[in-house]
Image 1 (spheres, rainbow, N blue to C red):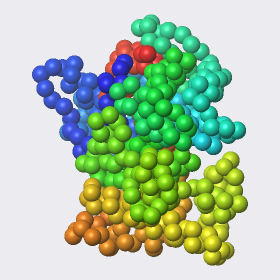
Image 2 (tube, rainbow, N blue to C red):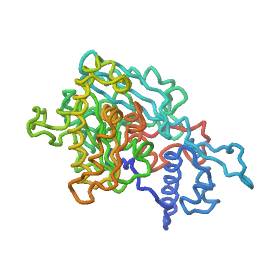
Image 3 (cartoon, helix red, strand yellow):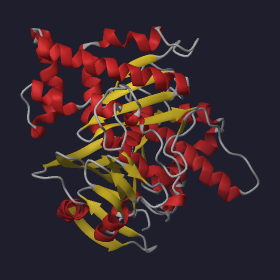
Image 4 (cartoon, rainbow, N blue to C red):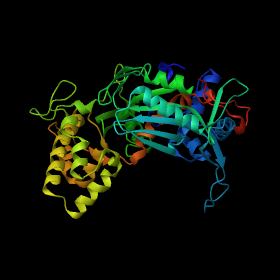
Length: 433
């Protein structure tokens, strides 16, 4: 399957069942809608599916039965309730379908195993002794995958089947701190990693045998928060992620992730916030990610790079105890520049919600009142009205969940890619490579 055939993991809400003359297309589309609702809801009843999709009960029953046969969902009786009449069966994502996710960073390589429904099953973090090369990341990922893979066989339809524990992996999703070309997963530029024009997705696919798709890490964060987190139910939002490699953004407008012509949209980290600022690797100066960065915060809190996951806890503790004047000045300076970028972005996109992840969420957590100018003092008349600012809600799982959505996208768009309607869940295979 080529990258151009991958569907967007961000879906417009309120979709109704497809009706047409081609019965195969109708069935495939309606299977996709049912699986998508189960995936994003975590658990949904047949009655809810009937209401949401506008189909009759017998059609919903047939669609659910096929998804069960394909091993994609599980159907069970609900817990006891006071509801009058026979309760509707509950459908949940199959715990056996999963994706592997990879997030290479300056300080660590994080590998995840994420199931349908956005459930993180396993997370492995490898601290780096130096900035990793693409081949070093490939070697680490292959070693982890080989170590977890319990079987490698072919099902009766010739589909590749690789099981990791009790999970059947359908592909790999990459969250890259840099520019990733949408058409083929080429990492055009990851400046902090020192990667340029690296066919990283292709290298991983050749090494592991899985289909691989990647995107900028902040785009993955936007997908995750829009689907499962603080952006759920909001069709216009901006997600801004702060990590070891700087700041990136993801923008969703009318339920659609903005990717740009080649997949590079959302580089909000290079918004000008200080005309007298520090020189940036992009060739400009005063960019958001040069004026707002994680390293000074770690230094102020006495933390090393391998302790970065403690930043939120340490910063909160410092503010509870009473921050030093130096720490308070640092935080307030970074927040001022962050607000400049957010006000500009909110005005450009007329967004409804801003979600902050990584160390940006930590900044918001200790001084939320300082973000009022984004909501109350927009220079554009009405531009800032109704803008909400929130922390990302998925915590350390956010990039894994978003990268997994990239890998799940083909299956969610066409559930017939896996298994067959006649096969039992035990006989399921993985997505064809």
